[in-house]
Figure 1 (cartoon, rainbow, N blue to C red):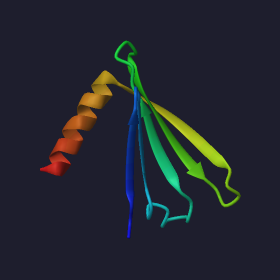
Figure 2 (figure 1 turned 60 degrees about the vertical axis):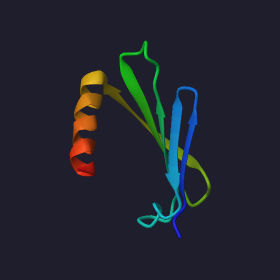
Figure 3 (figure 1 turned 120 degrees about the vertical axis):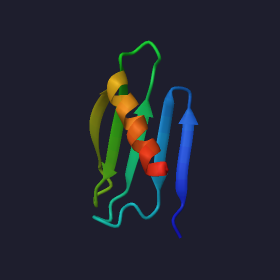
Length: 78
């Protein structure tokens, strides 16, 4: 059974669930940082490898990117 975990702490949102590791058997976590004064939304994807070493990849979204992402997700939800 998959266990979905969402944790919000101040400006951070962390999302992780058991089962998303089916592709490579390594656990991933998505962390998103927002600050209303920043021009970009910071996203961090962490992938823990077979030796329990975390590899982090960062990505930034502008507010225009975020608006398009919201539209994309709304279309998917409907």
